[in-house]
Length: 503
Image (cartoon, rainbow, N blue to C red; front, side):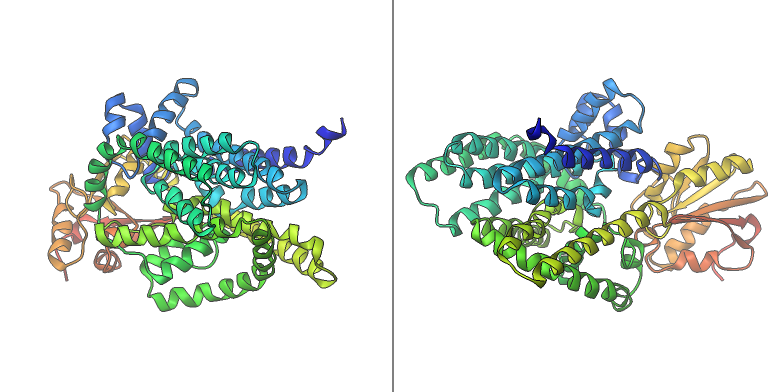
C-alpha cells in the first residue's frame, strides 16, 4: 500500500492538467492551421495523406481515427491535450528510473506547466504528438546508457520512437542526429554498443525513406508560402525564452512581427533579465547533477544541435524558421533545471533556499504566462469566432466582408459559412501582399460595386497581408469607421461612396 501512495503526487499533477484543459481548451477560436488540419482530416483519406502541409500525415491520420470515436471538431484539441498529459506521465516515469521520486516529480511539474508545451497541447496540430514521441525517444536513449540490464529493450524503443517521430514531423530527424553526436562525444566505443548504434540507425534510415515522398510536395508548398525568415541570433534567444513564456510574456507575436527590433528588445529585456536571475541557480545545479550522471552531453546536444541544423537547412532551402519546429525542447530544458534537486543533497546552507525560491519563481512565471495566453487579448489567437457572432447578431452577414490577410478567410468561413467573405487585394486569390500602391489600388478596385450601402473590412495579421501598412492608412481616412475590435482583428465599416481610389 505504501508503494502505491508514492504515486499520489503524479496522479494529482495529471488531474490538475486535465482540469486546466477542461476549463481553457475551448476558450479561444480555432487557429488558421487548425482549420486546415480539420479540413484534411474530414476529407478523403488519400487527400489527407497527400495534402500539402508542413509535416508528414501521421497526425492527420491519427486525427481521422480519433474522429471516428469523437466526431465533433473541438475534440481534436483533446487529442493534443491527452498527448501532453501522457508525455508528462512518461517524463515522471523515465526520471524515476534514472533518478528518484523527488527529482522525477519536480521535473514533471516543470514540463506539465511549461507554457510552450501547454500552448501546443491545445492546438489541433501534430506538435504535441511530436513532443510526446520526443520524450519517449530521448528518454529511451538516456535509459539505454544508464541501464546495462535492459539496454537492448531501451535501444529498441529508441529506434522505434525515432521512426515514429520522423513520420510525425520532418525536423524530428534532428533528434537522432543530435543524439548520435552525443554518443560520439561520450566516447561510447564498446563493440556491443557500436552494434546497437549501427544496426539501429540503418533501420531508421530505410524505415524513413517513404517520408521523402511526402517531403517533396510539402517542401514546394512551404517554400511558396511567403518570403523566408532565416534563423537569427534573436530567433535563437526567443526560442529558449519561449519555453518560459509560451508567446505570452513580453512582446506578443504580433509586436515581434510588426514593430522595429529595437522596440521589441526593449519590451523583452525586463523579462529576460528577471528570467536569467530566476533560472541561473536552477541551471547551475542542474548542470552539476547532469554531469555526475553522464547526462549533460545528451541534454546539451538535443538543446543546441537541432537549432544549428534547422538554421542551416533553412538557409539552404529558404524555409522560414519557427519555434514550433523545436517545441519538444520543453522536455530536455525541464530535465536540465529539474535535475538541480539531485545536486541539493551535496549542497549546504543557502543553496537549498536559493534553489527553492528560484523553482517557485519559475512556476510563478509559468502561471502568469499561461493566464495571459488564455485571457489577455494581446496574446490570444485571432478571435474569428466572436467576429462572426458580432456580424450575425448585427444582421449584416448578407454584405461583403473583405479580409486582410487573405488566408484568414479560412477560419472566418469555418465559423461563418453564410457570410460573404472576400480576400484582399484580389478576391478569390491568396498569397498576394499589399506592398505597393498598385496592389492597394487593386484592393480598392475590388471593393467597388454597383449596389449601394456600406461594406466591411476585417483587418488581421498585417505582417503577411499589409506589411507596409498601406491598407491600414487607407482605412484610417474619413468615411471609414472602426466598428469593433476583437483579439487580433479590427472590423472596419466603409462607406461605399469613398471607395474611389487613393487620395
